[in-house]
Length: 266
Image (cartoon, rainbow, N blue to C red; front, top):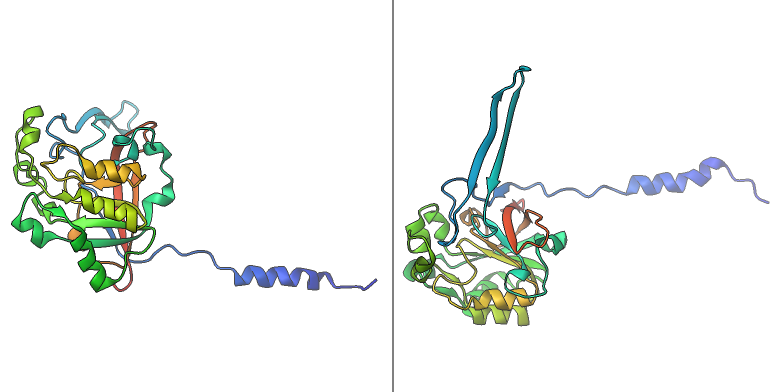
């Protein structure tokens, strides 16, 4: 039997531990892409909007300050998340979306010029092709963001939605850009993305009556982020997105806190 020093038995473990480094959180600038929820928050014309009620605000008889509120809101309004169940029966609700699907490498496709000329513009496959010609193929597992330029119109309802009217009859008067259904079909058939988002009220353009882009994407479990803020502060690539919606059990959507972490060169 060979006598071995206890130190020699421990040494490999020490070397291994020293060689292992903890993963580092991205150190780039953080861009908040969520609009505040308040009385100006834009909702679909058929929804009441965000309501905050102060339940307590002030100093208690015991001498300390205390504040507490209650709020009510439709799932789909302001910066929010669309779960696949929103338009795809039997598909995941908000609470069933894996967190890994809501964070990671992202790209930005800028179509502000096209949308400035046409409020009913629908993002085309050609727009994606032009982006890839300049920046390379969209990476597998990426989150895709579409910048239409409509973020500059927030929170002016008439400019942002095409009408400031409310109620069911106002829906036919909506005018804002979105993703063309044929482009959605191309995406699910030819690219592998985690999620898609944009700076308008819907992934389908305002005049849509069938919401086909919703249907196509959600049937393939690709969720959407809508009314995303500050896309003008993002580069075409080289950044990551973290997008966490309120975890509503069985929810078709919900308020979303979304941010981008820029790379060192951005």
